[in-house]
Amino acid sequence: MQTMMQRSLLPENSLPGGFRFAAVTAGLKPSGRPDFSVAVADQPASAAAMFTGNNVKAAPIHVGDRHLQRSGGRVRVVAVNAGNANCATGEIGMQACETVCAAAARTFGAEGHEVFPSSTGIIGVPLPAEKLVAALPEVERQLAGTTENFAAFANAILTTDTRPKVAHALVSVGDRTVRIAGVAKGAGMIHPQLVPHATMLVYVFTDAAIEPAELNTLLHDAVEVSFNRISIDGDTSTNDTVLLLASGASGAAVDAKHPAFRAALQDICTSLAKQIVDDGEGVTHVVELQIEGATSDADALKVAKAIAHSPLVKTAWAGSDPNWGRLMAATGYSGAQIEPERIAIWLGEQQICINGGRVPDFDKQRAHEYLKNREYTIRIDLGIGQGKCRFWTTDLTEEYVRINADYST
Image 1 (tube, helix red, strand yellow):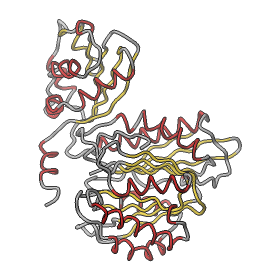
Image 2: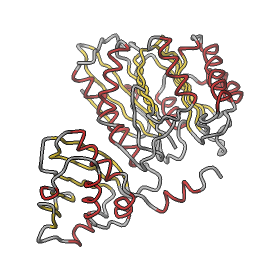
Image 3: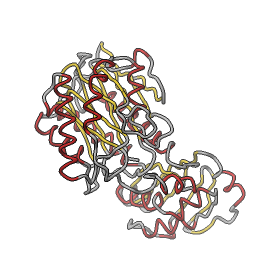
Image 4: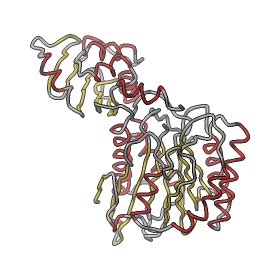
């Protein structure tokens, strides 16, 4: 297995076969930048998706879920618009979404339920479906299975992101090579709670031959250790979507137990998840939380989330302040089972807490210097079990406030 993670063009031999891509300007973004990305499968592709756990769901979430059920997990067209979330738009929003899907189906010779829609942008503004429909002829003209078109697709889905997020892998299956490539967007409103169920959108393409049920298992397992282990601001978007498509163009059959494919897919999802965190709105520090010694993995995750969502912790990180007492406090109210006198904490290699208290030789200046790094790890051992997890999060800065204080104006 060869896995490569990058943020720009893919190498020419790494793009999965059986798909074509395009991105155009439909006029939804005030900037005038491309805002309509489309991927078309040459034949109906196996599909699996996971959606936001937010009880307020955007129109494309409802429509996409319904289309997947009706098609039996097959997708021909992925249509993604940026600049408008089409959420909290009522029946008008549902109709707009279906209008775009129907027009895309006609344009690319698909059934209406074989079109998978996604939207990202501001909430509560009606989606001008007519602009997307009018852009479809140009989409059709530009469609191509090239790395340049794939990169254009990745760029046009962005909103407050500063850069596209791309990852790819090559996997040997017998005497054939399977390709996997993924794109993602997301910089704010990031705390995905994905269930079979500025937004996180992720699209992963492979040319392996995989049945929808097997694909569903693979996706769930990959998401659990990647996108469900990140947070920027603790807000769960109304539009979060992860879609995995398999064209079968390589002719290599894969099932949910294939170790190399599973590992590659999880590597890609983890890379994209970490790229989202690294590009968080106003982020100056990316933190990997390593929680161990919990009574269960679920309890370890509770601790990680409590720390990752604490404004006091996150603002301390923004100032490179080694105020480890805030880590203890968040651990205590996390809801996880703990014995405070057993807790130990490390900043990188420096232990700062032992048996629930400060180490005798605590070097505050060394800790402060370590927290000036762009990326660092914090390890917490609860000392009472085998449960563990890894979780990626960020600091909270004045720039984040500025970006989100005037997002709609």
